Length: 219
Image (cartoon, rainbow, N blue to C red):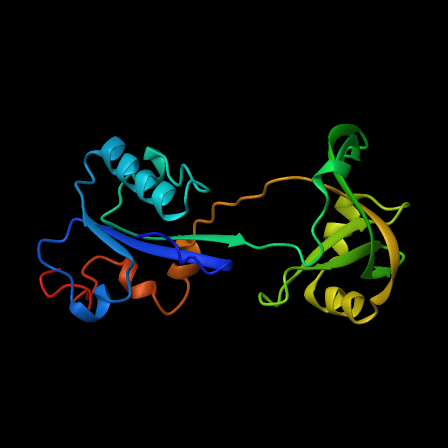
């Protein structure tokens, strides 16, 4: 299955297992894809998973796992998530130019820099400054970009930042005119939630002899 075609936040989930029987209908309805695999064949399992991820995200997630990620697994519940959004005020690609981007170590890197004069929400504080850019109105989300103040390092900003301070900064944002330069980039992340799930209400499912009857009556 592919991710939903509605622009914006999109996700797809899959379950990969070696269970002897069929999945329970109620559990099966929660999945976009399920497949029985032989976890002794790590390369083949990864190839199948990565083909699913590539197809489900229209090529935006080409490689989700490597063999070491599935070693020792008996079942995998995977979720592929992406944000496919459009700016409310699109940047003109003809204005994008190579420019210097300051790195955390103080060096610089030449990157494609988008530019636009616009009205936007922005804030300035002793530790940081930031801007909010809206995505298209039907999506209802905004992009937040924060950089350290001139006298601060990225490490200092990261050490000082917490949810309360971020909310204070956002509450102080003001609308004003600005010429914004923003690097064009691509971002992705791979999160292993095993430790988080083991510490919560699902911890019992990670122990030998776990009751998986709601997943499959023959588990």
